[in-house]
Image (cartoon, rainbow over all chains, first blue to last red; front, top):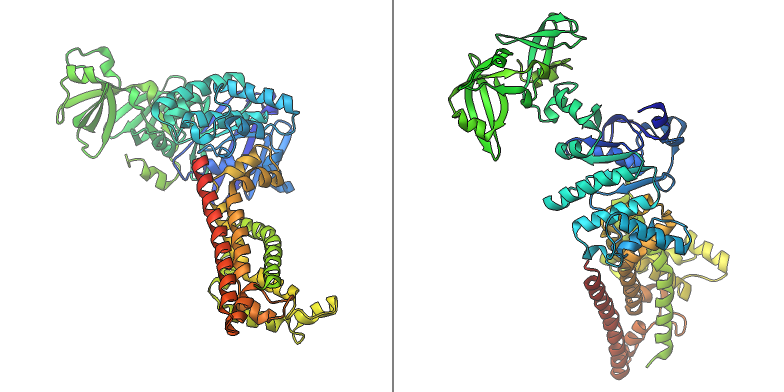
Amino acid sequence: MTGADLALGLRVRLEQETPIPLAAGFTCGPGEMLALVGPSGSGKSTILRCIAGLHRPRVGEVGCGQEVWLDTTRGRHLPPQRRRIGYVFQNYALFPHQTALGNVLAALGDVPRAARQRRGRELMALVNLEGLESRRPADLSGGQQQRVALARALARDPSVLLLDEPLSAVDQVTRRKLQRELARLRQRVNIPIVLVTHDLEEARMLADRVCILHRGETLQTGTPEDVMTRPADARVARMVNLSNVFHGTVVAQVPGSMTRLRWLDHTLACRFQGGFEPGQSVDWVVPQQYVILHQRVRPSRGDRENPVTGVVEDFVLLGDIASITLLVEGRPDVSLSLTVPTHVARRNRLQRGEQISVSLLSEGLHLMMPRTESDANAATGY
Amino acid sequence: MDWPALALSLQLALWTTVILVPVGIVVARALAWRRFAARGLVEAVIALPLVLPPTVLGYYLLTAFSDASPPGRLYESLFGQPLAFSFQGLLLASVIFNLPFAIQPVQRAFEGLPPHVREAAWCSGLSRWRTFWRVELPLGWLGVLSAAVLTFAHTLGEFGVVLMVGGNIPGETRTIAIAIYDRVQAFDDQTAGTMSALLLMFSFSAIAVVYLVSYRVSGRDGR
């Protein structure tokens, strides 16, 4: 965030041991969508509740723009009513006894009657619900309820929008539609939006930045591209479904050019990554899109880039793509995963037990500090 | 037909209900939504009148009301008359005896509110007071209605506790249930029968109304 953004953005820092451990810190600028991603039980919803004032952490600060909503050092904790937040709950939590419009009007506060009605209808139109104003939530579909919840959240004219797994309770088709609408809505409201999701794909599609959470701790915050190709450590790598996480030793550093890495019997060339000393042991990862299958019929010069040979252990067709697990030659205890388009797999007549070779593209090799002993072991041990 | 006894019963039932409905709502809210250490204990105490013989409860109340005990003495020094064998004593006993009827239906109703709906109200800017009137009560009013009707009907038919703490003073503590007993003792089966039929009809209609209303409401709201 720039300085100006910081002045209007959301700042969050939370710490506690019990009842739910938290060690979270992040910022979110106006117009930015930040996705909190993590498995269930990682404290995502608790963080949203802390921002909203529904949960009071032991230690922490939450502020938005010039306002301070929570500052435990000064004993400040504003109730939800005094924080300008829009909150879309996971199950929407609509008022079942009120109409769709009534739900929105309830959040408009003490606006004069005529203006309230006008604003309520504007919000219904904003979320494409014209004509359904007098329906009760029970008579609306999941997607429509979600939109009512969104309109109600926006009715307060919030300075932060909080979305708790907003798309988890709707079917696939509705989800796609709502995702597009959320993306469109973002362009119209210039406030920080914090989205909680366990779906990394959804986070990647919608969010400007993602924040990876594990047991209440923010492990890494960055663009989806960043986090998914350059994870901070082996833990993050596993959480973003990167399976090719290994252990190696830095052999040489050629500043500005490359880093050489010893792995099993291979010496791999990587793009230069500073901050590591020769002789230092590291974790490293190669995302599957940087593992390239060598074509048997048409060898190319590119095949010389970090070549690794092995035997196909597992071969699964998943529609357009085929997922392959390779046992590295001479080391049947080390496996490497890659995906190729199904037609490529067919053309190369891939099958179990077949010997193949691949290149690990040097630009995709990413080195990470091993965090602790247990983390290093948790990689794969190699 | 002992009309003064019926009037007294109705009066007792009305006052008990008027006092207990707000108490029931306050206690039920706390039990439904607050987590505190003694919660189980409080619930057990409230449920006690359901299982305790009315005579046992009546005995303890009578002991507490007597001028030999501090509460009894305090009341007498404040109001210049004893609690035992008075309408006020009867009312107090009735309030205590009906606590489970006034609290439990409301507690169940509040516990059954959709998850996060109160929090959604706070996050929509509604104060706690407004949330109560706009969200909690409209969603939990059936529980409040049940509590009111049950308390009223139950007070009307209460016998054991009334006999213990109130005795059988016409116009002061003789309720319709006592009057029925009194008539049977006097072999006046016809009057006893009439009064019993009246009480039966009233109790049945009260309970039936609660069920009918709750079915209609749940059908309408799709709840």
